[in-house]
Image 1 (cartoon, rainbow, N blue to C red):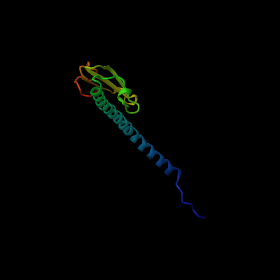
Image 2: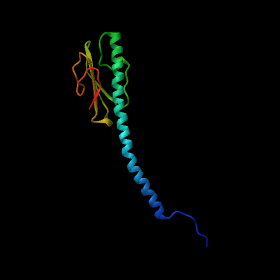
Image 3: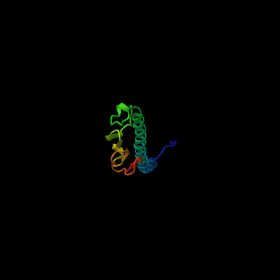
Image 4: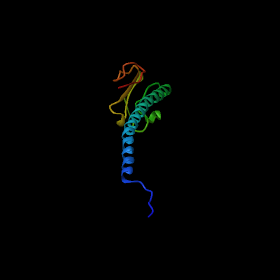
Length: 126
C-alpha cells in the first residue's frame, strides 16, 4: 500500500491559529494608521483653506464662508465649517467622522478665536 503525502488536521489547525494571531496583531496597527491619515487630512485641508481664503481676499477685499466661491474642495469625509468670514478676518473648524473626537481649528486676523485654536494663524487640534 502506498501512503499519500498530505497535511493532517492538526497541522491545518495550527496554521489557522497562527494566521488568526497575526491578524489580531495587525488590525489595531492598521486602524491607528488610518486615524493618523485622517488627522493629517484635517490639518492639510485647513492649510489649503487658508491659502484659498487669502487668494479670495486678494481678489475681492473680503473673506468668504462659501467654499464654492473659492473653488475649494476638501478631502473626502472632512467636514469644514466657517462660522465667521468678514473683511476683518475668518475662522474655520474641520472634523472627520472617522477621526472623531479630533477637531482642528484656525482663525485669522480680526476673527474671534474658535476652540481649540488660541493663537492667530496657528492650526490647533484637540
